[in-house]
Length: 121
Ligand code: AMP
Image (cartoon, rainbow, N blue to C red; front, side):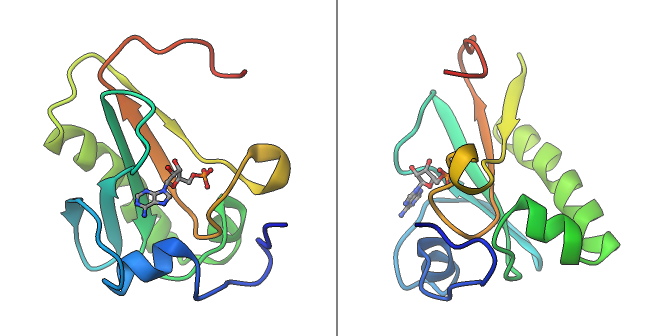
């Protein structure tokens, strides 16, 4: 069962941040890292993560400094610009078991490149 209360340094995104496993970087700065999802659900599927350790969106909103939250939100738009997305996109953050979260390091999915269907299935 996924634990989103206690940060686990062995989660796959922590390993990506430490460069222990490869990833395809789209954008990076001091506080965020954006990379291609390994199992894309659309022509464009990028994950945006903070470099600091937060288990989930919930954890991020509770514990991150306001300036970090602000710059994280801005960085999502910057990544969309870098990707040259013109016709819109969807951002998703799965939280916990019912949210379908698999990796316990907070991340935003940025999905684009085709007309997307219903949000829920
Ligand atoms: P979530 O279910 O919201 O936790 O999403 C986790 C996402 O991480 C899924 O879309 C996976 O395809 C993606 N993922 C898992 N391992 C990797 C990896 N090594 N590199 C890139 N994306 C990954």
